[in-house]
Image (tube, rainbow, N blue to C red; front, side):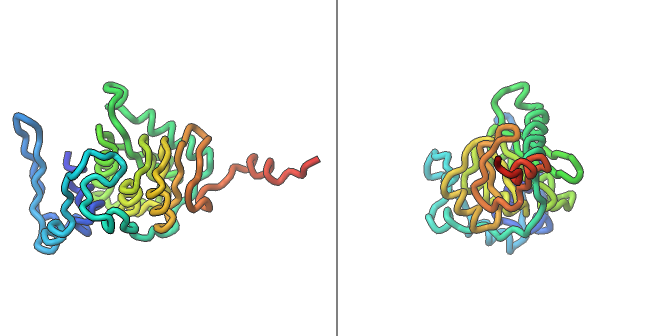
Length: 229
């Protein structure tokens, strides 16, 4: 429940760490649930500077941004983290699909997961909104002190610019989406050092930026280096 409040605050740069949240309260009501945060003074000032206004119902990742400069901001640079093979990308896609408990019931939710190839684990969060699912994932990682650099963000959705920015905020160097990215998302990923992989279907996918984090299996390497007759 509180994952989204923590994650949104972190990925939207309202807070730098969880210590800037003084109090977080869950308030159930007849029309839904409110999450109320009390922030330390510095974070409160950043919230006023970083406020998002819902100015249009667009789904390109620019809705709520009140300036083009803010929309095109370059995400923080991501350090070189984990690498994936094509087989591991296929495994991650399959693991995310299998972990979507809510979607299995509703057929109406997105999911975001952190796949850690060394552990073979997948931490997953779901929501009807793709941004919310990724914010929930960020909020789930933060209290455990887990760094995103040990894994890859896997998404059921397409990748728009703010999904790249949120991936960078988590500290992950690879983001994989089942659908295509936007052009602005690709440019932002390139500038931020993020490997962006889209149109992922099993072991088949397209790499749009920083391909060096994606390795080939031994059989693929043999095939690539096999002399032509």
